[in-house]
Image 1 (cartoon, rainbow, N blue to C red):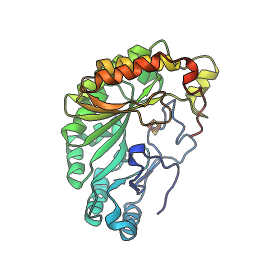
Image 2: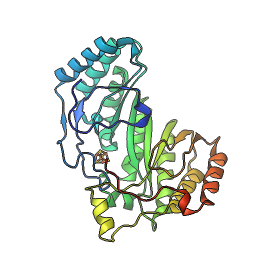
Image 3: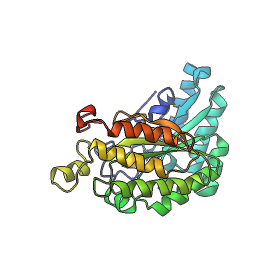
Length: 294
Ligand code: SF4
C-alpha cells in the first residue's frame, strides 16, 4: 500500500482499511490545524493508482475488510465520477464491506450538490466525517474555517437528505473563555437544524494548541486564551442542554477532560449529571495544558 503525506483517520475508523485517494487538504487554512501546514499540497491521486492499491488490498485482505476509509483531509473534494468509481470498485471487490467513509468539508458537500451526493451514495459511499468545529460565526471566521453557519446547515442537510451518514466533530474551547457559551449555543443550533433532516453523530474534541499553528502564535502573543477545564465542561453542559437529537454523542479523544457517550435525548440527564460531577472536581483532577505535536 502506498501512502503520501500525513495519514489521519477518525478513531472510529481504527479497524478500517486505509486506501489513499487524495493527498493533503484543499483548504489548509484552519488556524488550529497543523496537519498539512508543511505540505504536501492538495492533489487527487491518479484514479489508476487508487484502484491498483484497492485491487491489491482486495487480494491481500479480501473478506476480512468490513470498513474502508479513503484518506486524506478532504476526499469529498475529488471529482464525483472518480470517487464514485473507487467506491463502486470497493463494493465489487470486498465482499464483506459494510461501509466506505471519507473526511469531507462542508464546502465540498455543497460543491458536490444533491446530484453528486446521490451518485456517490448510489456507488456505495456511506459516511462523511466533517469537522464542524463550531456553529458560531465569529469563531468560524476567527479560526479561518472558510464556511458560515448557514452554509454548514445547508450542507449538512444535503448530506443527510442524500442518505449519507454524517459524523460531526465539535471542538470545545475553540472560542476561548469570552465566547465559550455563545459557541456552545450556536453550535447546538446548527446541529439541531441539520439534525432535523435525519439522525447523526456528534464527536467532541477539546482544543489543544498545536505546534506551528496560527492559533499557538496567537496564544503566545496574548491574543487568545485557552479555556480552563471547568470552562470547557460548562461549555459541554450548555451543548448537552441545547442539543435536541436524535443523535449519538461521543467524546472518544485524548484531548477531552471527560469521556461522554450516549444518545440524545434519552441520555441527556445522565450525561449532564456526569458533567456536573466533573465540574465539582479540582483543577488538578484534569490533564495539564500542553502543546500538541500531531
Ligand atoms: S482542520 Fe480540516 S479543513 Fe481545516 S486545514 Fe485541517 S484538514 Fe484542512
